Image 1 (cartoon, rainbow, N blue to C red):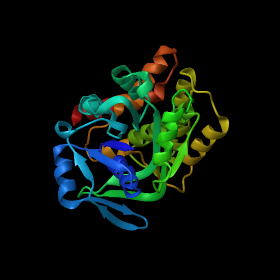
Image 2 (cartoon, rainbow, N blue to C red; image 1 turned 135 degrees about the vertical axis):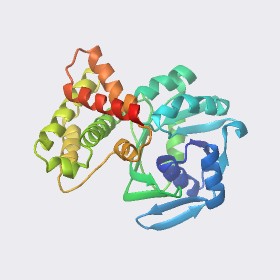
Image 3 (cartoon, one colour; image 1 turned 180 degrees about the vertical axis):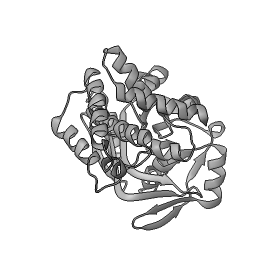
Length: 304
């Protein structure tokens, strides 16, 4: 299977590297700065098991040739419009596009551009970041990759995707209910991002502060009410696990949005929090805590 990995940051770099190491034909679509960095130093993975370096196949938008069987999109959500332009020449009649982005707005955006039949569901669970020299740093052994048809019908095309991905040295989950997985991932990451960015700290600091537990539970409840109104069929055991994970004061957690914010980078405010507020308004839901988070993030963006 010919695979195009759009992005070689922490997510794209890690999972693309594992696919390449498993023998898949993987090309990384990257910008000029990342292209030069990877050309010079290779793609470096720092994992709990040690350091690995590989020489990846690289392409830039103006050098893409031919169609790909699978395009995995791993950029930040605010870069999606440009990436759609970049990957367009690589999309053929049989191409499938698997976005691994935060939130859910990107699915409709990709479907409108390339067609509903081309977009499949995907998400990952990994604690990873980029180091100062562009190395991919996997901070914990967690490396899960979920995928499946958005309508739950995993036909022969999806079976081919599974065959390519399941032996790539990561924990793969071929799901027949990927939409619920996507809703639950959004519940987790948006709660985590909201409380960390608002309180400017990790979950351990928040939970051991006066009112911190009530803040986390309040944000969680608001988000759960929004996604349920939008169509999420609540799985009580799954949502309870998410809240339990977030509420453990012994395990300090932060979100990628919080880490980007503390470094002065652009953040996915509209895609992670702003979209929830738009959906809440559609159902006349009161979300005062989410509104406070959104104002906080907007002020940050104005001050960048």
